[in-house]
Amino acid sequence: MIKSSFFIEKLRENGIDCFAGVPDSLLKNICAYITDHCDAEHNIIAANEGAAVGLAAGHYLATGQPACVYMQNSGEGNIINPLASLTDPEVYNIPVLLLIGWRGRPGVHDEPQHVKQGKVTTGLLNVMGINYDVLSKEEDKAEKQIAQAIEALKRKEVYALVIEKDTFDNYTLINNQSPITLNLSREEAIQTVAAALGEKDCIVSTTGMISRELFEYRAAMHQGHERDFLTVGSMGHASQIALGIAMVKPDRKVWCFDGDGAAIMHMGSMAIVASKAPKNYIHVVFNNGAHDSVGGQPTVGLNIDLPAVAKAVGYPKTYSVSTKEELEKALASITQNLSPITTSPILLEIKVKKGNRKDLGRPTTTPVQNKEALMDFLKG
Ligand SMILES: Cc1ncc(C[n+]2csc(CCOP(=O)(O)OP(=O)(O)O)c2C)c(N)n1
Image (tube, rainbow, N blue to C red; front, side, top):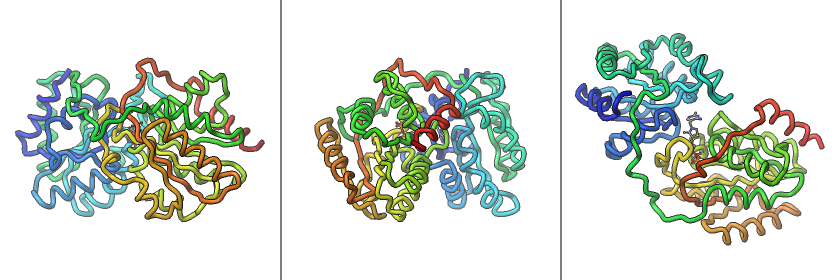
C-alpha cells in the first residue's frame, strides 16, 4: 500500500498543493489525510464533483498551477459537463489531476449501485479523451506514474489516476470534531421520524447510511420495506424523486430523508420543491455536518442556516431540532399540520451527531424489488 503522506508530498513537490472534491469511502484514508494536512484555502470539500472541477479551473486561472480533484467514480457523471465544456482542449484547455476511487471494479464484489459505474469508469475517461493510469499499490511504481501524470499536466491535459480498493495505507481523521456538541444519533432520529409516519405515507431516503439505518429499522419492527424508496445511488437527487411522487400522489404524505451532504450537493433542487408547493411534502435533513457514510469529512452543513435557506427559496414552514424531545414536539406539530394539510412543503432539520453502529447491515432486497414493492404500495 502507498502512504497518503508519500502521495501528497510527491504532488506538492511538483507544484500541486490545491485539492478540491467530494470524499469517497475508497479514498477515505487519503481524503482524511488531505483534510488534516491542508488548510481551508488548499482543500475545498465541494458541493459536488462538477463544482470541484470549477474550483480547480479557477485555481489554475489564478496561479497557473493545476489542482487535484478527488472523488468517487459515482461523481464522474457530475464532472462530464465541465470536462467537455470548460477544461477540454477545444474550449479552455485547462489541466486538472483527477483522483477517482474505483468502486464496482469488474471482478470485485460491490453494492448494486456501483456495478454499472464500475464497468464504465475507464470507458467514460476514454470517451472524454482523458488519459489515465490505475495507480500502483507499490510506492516505486506509483512514483513513476505520478511523474507521468505531471508530464501530462505540463502539456495542459486533464489526467486521471484511478484508485483501486486498499491502495492507500490506513489513516484516521484527526480533525474529526463537530463545530457543535450533539447528542442525538442519526439512527435514533430516523427511528423517531419513521415511527411518526401514517400508514399511507412514503419515504424517499438518501444515499449512504440513512437508507441502511431505515432499512434496518423496518426489519427490526417486522415491517415490510414497501413504503421506502432507498436511493442507494444518485446522491443528491432524493428530494426530486420525492417531489416526483408527491406531485402525482397528493393524497399521500411524502417524506424525503436527506443528508446534509446530499442536500448541499444539489441544493438548487430545494428551490424547485418550494416552487411546486406540494401540500404533502416533508423534507427531513439529518444534519451531522459531515459526509459520515464515507469517513466523516466535514460539510458546511452545521455552519449554514439550512432552515433560512429553505425559507428563502419558499418553504413556508421550517423546524430545526437537536434533541429527541424537540424532535417529538416538531413531529407532533407537523403531523397535526398535515391533517388537514395547511402549510407545506416543510423542512425539518435534525442536527445529529456523527457515527454509526458498527454492525450496521445493508439492504437485503435488490433495488428492483424495492422499486416494485413501492410502486405496488403507491397504487393502493
Ligand atoms: C455523486 C456521488 N458522489 C459521492 C458519493 C459517495 N458518497 C456516498 S454517501 C456520501 C456522504 C453522504 O453524506 P450526507 O448526505 O451528509 O449523509 P451522511 O452520510 O452524513 O449521513 C458520499 C460522499 C456518491 N455516492 N455519489
